[in-house]
Image (cartoon, rainbow, N blue to C red):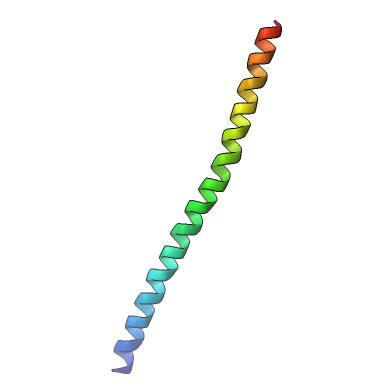
Length: 54
């Protein structure tokens, strides 16, 4: 009985840990993606300005 309960708890803990891991990974990707995107926009803007001046 006790062992069976522990297994259920362990499964729940593993499931929630996986959800937390997935969520944090998604958040990390989003927080990394947006600055990268803005940097890419800035670089392309700089390049267009340079090519316009030439």
